[in-house]
Image (cartoon, rainbow, N blue to C red; front, side, top):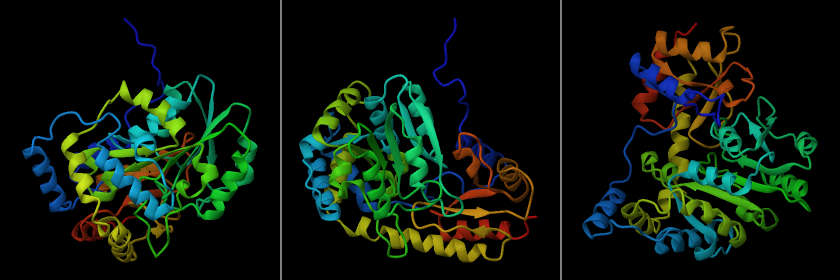
Length: 381
């Protein structure tokens, strides 16, 4: 018996690999993007209440109506877009699932998708498993900005979609209004779709603002916009997210969704629908997580690592250029074994494993965790 693999070049993810090593060497895990601090106890209580009240059976395939209504109101307040809760929002088991389902909805064999590297590691496999072809465009190091002239050169008659991500994982870079205008000009008059990964929408620092596809009607009409409750409420293990798209696109998205997931965790949807009224929980999130970035940055000043700017997300990149000639993966493995701190080599986010001597650190941790990690890195050589 033989399986003709749909992902012949895919093995264990770098996140799993580094996490296993971290456990083996009792290292502090600043690799994978999850908090080590607790979530809001009231939200937990609301889940308990929903379960006790008997809300444990299937809810509507598209998501609990009350939750979708709350999300529509939120989108109106934040992005001035009056979306329809019934026709344009689907609740999903996580943001990654929403992205995968968008790709599955769109792609046929031979379709090309432009991605920006370094890129979240699920994008390429999502495209390839659906018969698509990945067309990578490297962000310009060290600012990790987009060269829109280069993007234009990569567009062909086979280009089906472009996927964007802001705030960006792994770099913490943000897309600007000008970036959105440039993207809009590129796709105007074409059949190209946009998938917008906005799971870190509220994790934006230094009084900057998240710029969403939802704010640009000419972009939104061709877009699937994907979000995560886990990143907003410090509950990544819940695997709860949602997708927003115009009615025609969402109709096709739901055709795929209904035969894959069908519906998501009911008690958590009831709890989230009630908890969304508390706007401060997401409106002040950037300041909270930004303070952790600042704390870690201060602690890292005494180490030989050099920070690259981070304006959003859970992550900051640090350069070890001049410290070692090892590859990023070799150096990251040595940090775990010799200094007991786990990071992620940014080369893992490139299809061709591009090397810039940069590692990704997750700072969404308790201050004592960050302080101890920085202490361990003081004498790296």
